[in-house]
Image 1 (tube, rainbow, N blue to C red):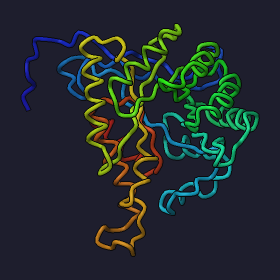
Image 2: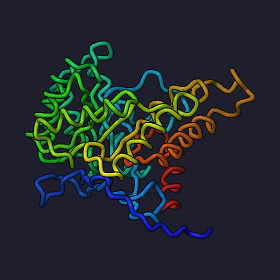
Image 3: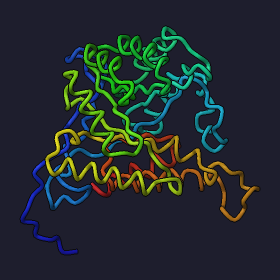
Length: 319
């Protein structure tokens, strides 16, 4: 293939963010992860620097998931009741670059775990693994504002990535992350204008732009993937053309969304023509992740080890 001669370079770039803090920086992580930095469209490095390689964060839940099919729960069957050991298995056995702790159990309708219980869980995971930690609330505003404040304090100094904040609920967590030295995830419901507005609101509280990661509600293959792709692509183009309020790295939630689809969850006997679920499910997650990579994604939240291995191999080949 002949590489085109590109005379014009992009005027902007995606911000770089380093997650995790080692001992010399006041934390306890054994490694840090730097994301962002792209000065070109994804994988078009003849236009400019592609930036840091995209990374995979594997999901760990604070309570055993109730709606996971056997295909997904089987690799973690021995650790589903122990988030710290679950995280350790993801890192040591399946190669996770980061751990994303999803606080499903703090939701009032799904366990209503207390802030103290959750802080203990966070500390146990930080002790079990040395990679940076993402901590994701339950998206119930009142509960998140209560729990995430104490969670942030429990992980102070570790430079975690906390979220999510929205245009209607951003002040409490923004102030907390600012005080405790964490990075922040801003959420928009697949809307580029709202995404920019949330970033502006957060920045007006003097939160640094280079500690913000954007999140658009992720659509899985067959369930809104094209819409998510187009919005994220527009965000990346805005960053490359110099829009400072859109120059943040991007995270997407592939694992949760891919395994909600009937195609990944349906039993083999229900729709035999679809093939074996043990292959079909991980494939659905893999295709969703690889597709969104090309729109400009820096962190991919994933679940199944087979899908993680395939996506990491794809990233290595593309880079």
